[in-house]
Length: 90
Image (cartoon, rainbow, N blue to C red):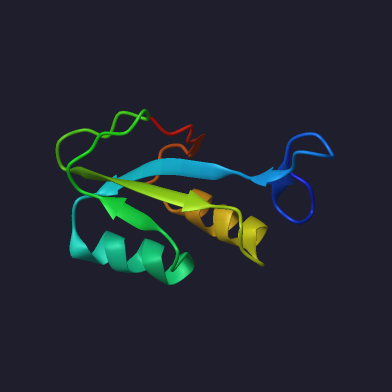
């Protein structure tokens, strides 16, 4: 689904992929995910389409970065991240 450069779409309309996931609402989880992906945006008051529950924060990232694949693999390996979904915005 993603090219080696982290892009998706047809050849004349390539774009990066934005993704979302939930983390526990605590400072250690925030520090850990931001150390893996400094470009992440944290949204403490939105469940996102992924449906973060009370006690969780929504995180939104993007593949428009050099080590996008390594970043996604590291995030996916964290035990408290249940799933990572594409983010389509509102």
